[in-house]
Length: 283
Image 1: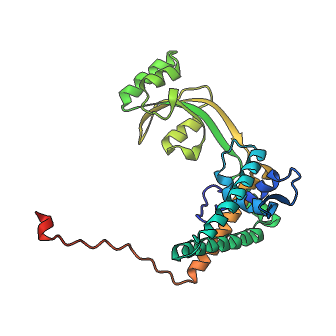
Image 2 (image 1 turned 90 degrees about the horizontal axis):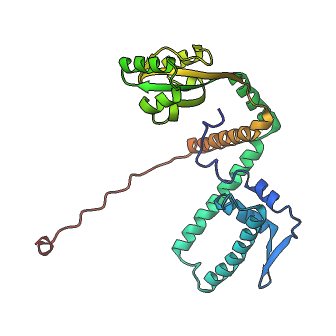
Image 3 (image 1 turned 180 degrees about the vertical axis):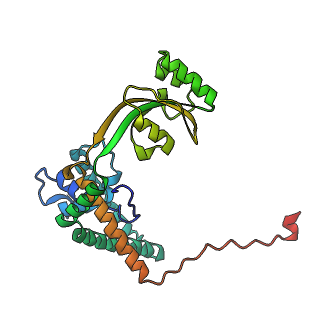
């Protein structure tokens, strides 16, 4: 439920402020650097981390990330000052870029406000309870299979494995499913498989090999290895997913409402005009 909801805009900046709080928890002073007397503060670093955090290598520890951000801000001050001295912050191209980034910052401010109002304890508990009630516990089966093209081939495969040949060895030799090395499928719920296959897999007792069954992919025999019931995870384990689901849903609804009240026109790119061919160039 939580993974299927997507929104292009909703993914911007989730949880970055929290991450920066963890990184900056090593007792920094308010002012963390100066460049020719110009101060760089923790607030500046938090903004920079919100922008750059997702692009930093995951293997960097908090101290390395902090050092990277501080050095980036120092370089930013120096290069920005040089660009201003060279009057590179003038002209229509620069103004268009500034307008774009201002609108992006305003958008993020609105999305942050929407998220703060939407992600409440009441809503978290409501969404979790609804998901837990609708999904409940799920039965899973762990199995392997052999897939062949014809009924004759599947009967021969069944004869081999029931006479004692190793199931994985036979699957490796003849199975037509390249995505299941040795025939292994791992754990799966009933709805994840085609109906004919799932029905037989869930009827076959653990430790047994099924009779042949035909699906749209071909003929199968199934070795059921184990069965278990998966309870719906506690809120503490999925809280992050619940919060992301609520955030994306609230963002999507807000954007759709804005679009519904706006006059939006989109235009197809024009095909470039054909350049006339002069008699001299045609020769």
